Structure formats: C-alpha cells, structure tokens
Length: 275
Image 1 (tube, rainbow, N blue to C red):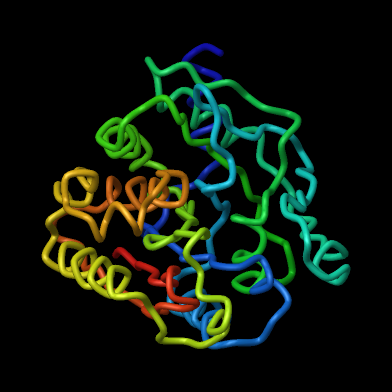
Image 2: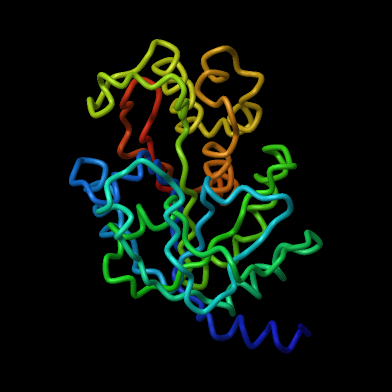
C-alpha cells in the first residue's frame, strides 16, 4: 500500500468529534442472552456516546503470537466456549467487517508487523457485549489480536498509535475482566452480585483506586502489586484489553467506572469509560 492509498482510506473515515474509549467487563458468555444489570449497563453507555462509524475491539479471546487484525467483509460469529445452552450457540451477530480500517490499522501500528486475518471473525468477547450496545448489527466491527509474547508496557505503548482513529468516528473497545480467576469461582454464588473472596475485594479496590487516580503505571506493573493481584490476574489474557484502553487516554480526559461489581467470588464486571 502506498501513501496515496492510505490517504484515500483516511479520507473515507471522515473526521468527527473525538470518540470515547471503553473497557467492558464481559463476564460469562451467558450475558449475551440474559437480562441483568450488566447488560443494562452496556446499553446505557451506548446511549451516552455518539454512534460510531466503525468499532475496533481488542478481545481477551483473541490471544495470538504476533498481532493480527480481521480484514474480511463479513466476519463470522465465533462460539468459542462449551457447556452452555443451545440458545447461546444459536446467537448470530452479523455485523459487517471493514477491510479499509484493517488496512489503516496495520499502517498506523508500523513498524510492528500486523497480519491481515481472514479466518477469525468476532469472538464472544466482542459480540456478547456489542450486541447489547448495537443490536441491529449495523456498525462494522473489526478485531485486533493481543500478542501474548509481549509485556503489558508494550501493549500500552502500542495502543497509543491508534489514537488518530478516535477522531474518525471509530469506537475502540477493550473487552475482558480485571478480576478473572475461573479456577476459584464460588459456584454457590455464581449469580450473586457483590460476592467476592477477600483477595478479589482487595484487588478490585486497588485497581479501582489506580484507575480513578490515573496511576496507570501500577496497573501496567500489576505483577509487582502483591498477592491479591496475582490471584485476580493469574493469566494476562482478560487483563490486557484494559491496558489497551488506558493507553488511549489523554491526561485531560475523564475516566468513570460502571458495572462496578464482583460476582461469583472471583470475577469483576468493572467497566471503564474514557472521554
């Protein structure tokens, strides 16, 4: 792609008022078909922000060696889970893709090599939340994968290169969970909002304070922050989408929390709106 091609793509994505950035705690795939306070929170935040022209989603469920971006015209709905009711597997979210935005994303992230992917689609980290925000599936969606070989600081810095997309009507969403330890779920309270092990309560309090104080370095260096964070983030996949969202925040922008509850002992639904 030459500079003229890139300019043509950029012109197609008209300049707009700067879009906010979201991090959504997506929780169980069942949130896709259930009615609860978290689903309502997703709907409410969509009403509070301008309708995007395109969505770029960084999902916990596309963890790859190297960085990839979906570049197909019609991404498939991926049911990347097991053991759930058939009704969940029947859900389709037929939002179109946007190959032009995939091209521009690849160019913006240089010199990092980004592979344009035509096989993935939309995993449940993306469609299970976006379907509540935009149920008509009329907004194109692309996904950017998370390179599992890189540390949090790398992802924070990489996200900054995407900032100009916010000025073109593009909504960037990180989708994961800050507290996410499936091995320690309290199954007796899996649907009881506000239940958390002591370490989960402590981890939520710490991370919320750092978020609201703008202390992102502690969040980037989460592995150095004690036992509660080690339990809360046993693997980085669900946590790193938050780091992408934080990397896009400017100092002058507001940051607010919503859906800020623990559930099932070891999961938090805490979500973040920036801008």
